[in-house]
Image (cartoon, rainbow, N blue to C red):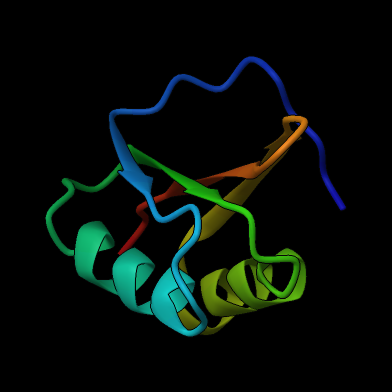
Amino acid sequence: MKFVSDVKADVTADIVYMMCPMHLLKLDEMIKTLDTGQVLEILTDYDGALEDIPAWCEKTGNDFLGLDEDESFYKFYVKKLV
């Protein structure tokens, strides 16, 4: 897993406390609103996102930049490429 702490997000989606599969549905919805090259930050407390979000990026052709871990949630960073 790639950990980062210096990524600047253009847009943030806060889905902490939302049940699965909201992390992927919100990611898919929000990435469509971005311009190519912009970065989406997703805040979630769902452990399954550790595997799901990088896999989603690989499947869709977007760039998983990494994640930052807080005491209570994860911050995932995805750069829109397509």
